[in-house]
Image (cartoon, rainbow, N blue to C red):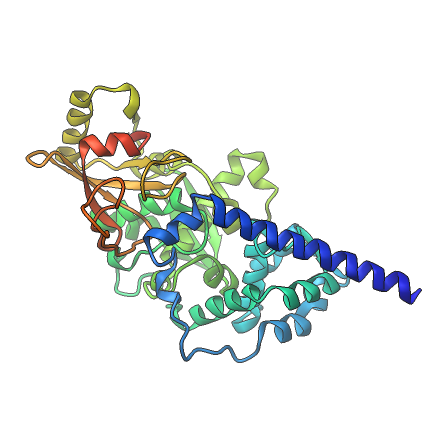
Length: 384
């Protein structure tokens, strides 16, 4: 009996180690999304990177040991469905919420070798063999002190505080940044407090009722900088998750609205929600430069929400499969003003251009139109 158990433990440890090595190798040799992000910005969650002097009250291993039985709800196993339920539990707070968010991020984003269903023993082996779990937990725990429980910290959204966190929700964050920059009052009027939650009514007329964000929903999916500005970003995320569940069957199967939107989507839905009108699509590779210029002049003159995005195998330094907002066009310089929702600062080593990148301040950079059409795929322009 003892030999059988020992054999099972050894096999699991070997499988886990192989998964970790494989994931690390993939990051090194070519993932152009999250990994390439770090070649340009310090991180997709820069304010949280400096953990000097910060230590959680309890280490990750201890928090999990103390809570696993409760989290598993007597089954001995935590799977995706149970994880979604736990993230929405308002009674889970503090370091416990940070540990739970760490597990969730790994489980749904296929990080750290965390499987979609795990026992306490499997998690114990993962924790011993993967110190990155502790590091991510420290990041999540450090964000707890940044949570501002008011809906807007200063009465309205502050664009300068917006910075995409560790989730793959650039398609949500890019249009929201555009709104915070140019139409912050529309965001304010779209959110109304209710008993125990919020009613969100978008300019399109679509609406959703959402519960108060929990600690785990906040620290697991947002940067510290965004959390400093209040709950409004998370409330809008939850509203989008509820609306997606109404129309997309696979999204409805995910028990938590934050998780529904956290790992990929399309910004076109957000343009419709915020503009309420038609959307013009301009395929850059198939459209003449003259026509593109005219479209850019329109969005500048009429202040139209405009999104763009990079293909998976993008040329140069910018991240692939990533959404950006177009903030403007400078006709005299023939340059496009673009915002990366990472909100990063960057100074290229060498002349500005596709190869070296562009001077960037809080995610905003300018690039010649001739280079813009080489890097980006489409323009999506919302008509009010």
